[in-house]
Image 1 (cartoon, helix red, strand yellow):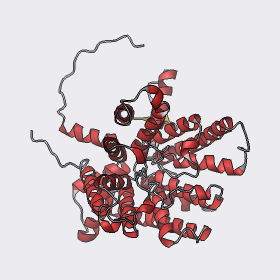
Image 2: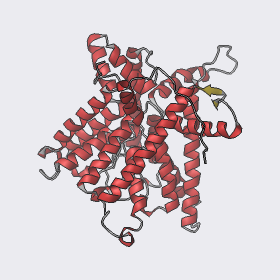
Image 3: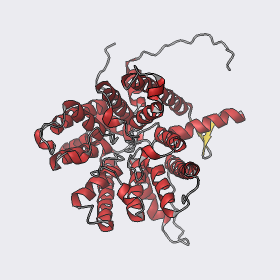
Image 4: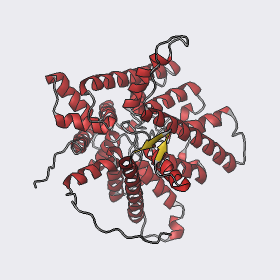
Length: 454
């Protein structure tokens, strides 16, 4: 049987790869940098990968690029955030008013995990909703600080925040606005909206008018879909849990000095929101306590929600793993989430995705430990293991936060991080789907045996 190399699941991978190489070529042009010829091919490729995969890790500050270079980065962020397949399908749809079954399946699988939806109306809603959110976000930033957020800067940061990219035109990210509640709230709202998933956004917009009707109205109020409810509850739980953990960690690390002030509570809340794949920071990550860094590691690994601009193993995977563990502890046969039993296939996908994520993180950490000083004795490398692990999970979760290791990476180290960003943006499950397309199912069963575990 002839293997199919071009499949609905493989198309996004090919389009993302092509976009990265085209973006790298543009960023390598002399006109892309303030000092012509200062951007090497490796740094251009790294920046293009980070922008397209909406990660935010940078070997060069964004301010080192010219207006043209920054515009290229912004375009790559927008393409990567909304998805190359989404744009391609939209062009085909508006051009011909029809679309192939392959494209329909690809977009359905990557955005909604439902290949039966009406593509045309969904894409129109998607683009309209996302552009409106980005426009409102840019106008809000202009209103709160018109001096530092000029029109281009406001749109750049609004798109970067909504797409969970973490790229900033300021070398210190958002540390200047550490105590500014208005700017912080705009960024946090954009990050959350970009991280819950496009289908959840549209579900909210369709449900909101019904929920806002007068209480005495007899019209049946529309309820959020079950998955949307799971995503929103899990996201809120992770934000609050991370917020509390960071506050306590920094309170302990700084001996409780003034950490219950509004400014410190705001900083902790922002980092809890941003660490789940956005990558902006209002505090120097390298100065946070080890406890805080471990909390950020956990949040970065979980990431956002399916079909969103975010990376990580996703909130639904996290919720499924927790529910699976609980069902095993209480002896329940089914995995139950919010009163609904989860099908076995979804549980299996969550488990294999977690295993793949752990394998990739451990492998990449080992490889980076070799490339970034593997020949040095432990006393000279003390403390770098946590920095390497932080860098690896940040890349895999397409977060972009760093303790300061990124600019000093070796060539092989940059290559490892680029692979992690690419895999993390598309998701290991996409690669597994391609592999499964090449596999041949066995049409027989073998005798089963028991084994002592533990």
